[in-house]
Image (cartoon, rainbow, N blue to C red; front, side):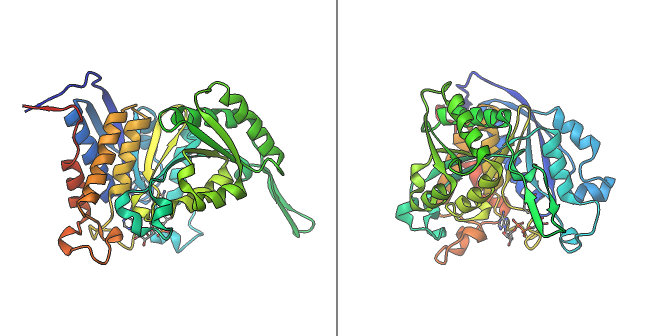
Length: 373
Ligand code: NAD
């Protein structure tokens, strides 16, 4: 019999958005892990599924139906799979498209910060193209700003179409709110924030740096350093262990997070969160992977690690979140792999399908202070 020693039992509503392709296969495993956490820690999680992407277009004509949006606005957290279908990839002229659902959802929910943890599991050291001795122990949390920068500033053509421009623009409040998120996260980690900009050249970066410095005064227990983006790009590969929390703008974040994803080796392992002031959205960084859809071989670990992020960030359940991460670690340590992360010498009986990998991880989830009697 298991006795719960946890006093903070919580009741939460989670919407699952499977989306398209392998989205349904991997979120099913993410959900299973959340159910297991609820069972072990004594929480109550209510689940509700909703449509998005191509699946939603097929059924309702819209990539983000109002019924979905209403559910999202009234829940406590969202676990999302992926959207996308080859039909749209091969025909850019189609007017109603799955990714419109994703963009509208981010806008409607005010999700201004994208978090991407880059944590390398020791067991997968060999899967990266960077030397193991450089990588070992890397654990970085990126905060990429999502609503400003060159993506949203004024853009256009002039000079008879021979000149083009995009305006890099930031407002103080946009920098303030993401800087607060980064400092708050650093407090729960190794208490260091690296702010990345190009303040030696760009005025918007000078506002960025000035604002981050101001915000940092409220977090005197957290060390702050500034790096220029070119230097940061180099140091990320040269000495990834020197980073804890990194906060940066939309464009620099776009590039640096893809660079950093290589530290972790495989697409199927990386989770992300998009957060604002209300509900948080948690999703793997990979897409709908139609080449492997329905084969049961998709790696569910990115979705499972997204569920761990959800527990930590939206529900403040650090212990529960760590229990999931530890379970993933143990499963990998026992040599279990999905096809995408299997090595040449992985025995076939250790190569698991999506469902069995989810099951293995669930079986390894334990509450630290659980008393067995
Ligand atoms: P992808 O991430 O879907 O797949 C890239 C490669 O990685 C494929 O070979 C795939 O099989 C493999 N892969 C991805 N996830 C995996 C997993 N969990 N386990 C094992 N292997 C995995 O990227 P793509 O092929 O460029 O795009 C496919 C579709 O996904 C497109 O329609 C694209 O628009 C969409 N997409 C959606 C999102 C999103 O919803 N956030 C993100 C990226 C791409």
